[in-house]
Image 1 (cartoon, one colour):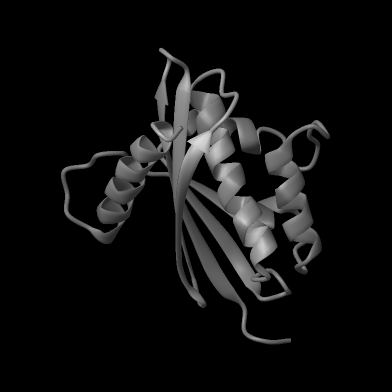
Image 2: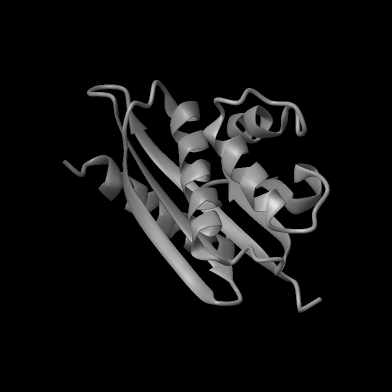
Length: 154
């Protein structure tokens, strides 16, 4: 068994009810480096839906990156959305098959030796726009800025 490492995912979204536009950004830190992506979200009904989709996009990126081949110790997901955390973690082991986020999480779990989603993922609420200068604030500010750019993409 090789070295197992942690992956940290930071996400943020920007949502505008009129004209119902949303954007996302994520910043992933792992042993292979940093991955930063942003873009437009389609078919978001509200900010909570946008936050969940942003987390799903980041988890999907990890799933498709090849980082998961039994090398993951823990995936930390930092978000400023308590609602998204509650929605995703409400029932760790039983969930609707239509949940894309849980589907991606389950596929990642299957590529590791984790027995439960709860043992693989740790969702953490981070206060947005805190006044303190830190690495976490820098990353959150970047995600906030880029999600607004993504929201306005055509």
